[in-house]
Image (cartoon, rainbow, N blue to C red):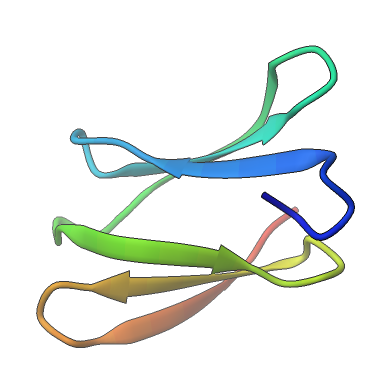
Length: 65
């Protein structure tokens, strides 16, 4: 969850990271990861940067529109 509790980020088995608006469950953003299994994600306090950590010990930062 984001710091303000308004946004949730999830990772699914189909290697997609999704950002959701908590108030109504609307999907705000989806990004298909580059074929790697995602270990976990973190969303920046302002909701604009998504950090993705993979099981191969790499980490990537993505700008979220």
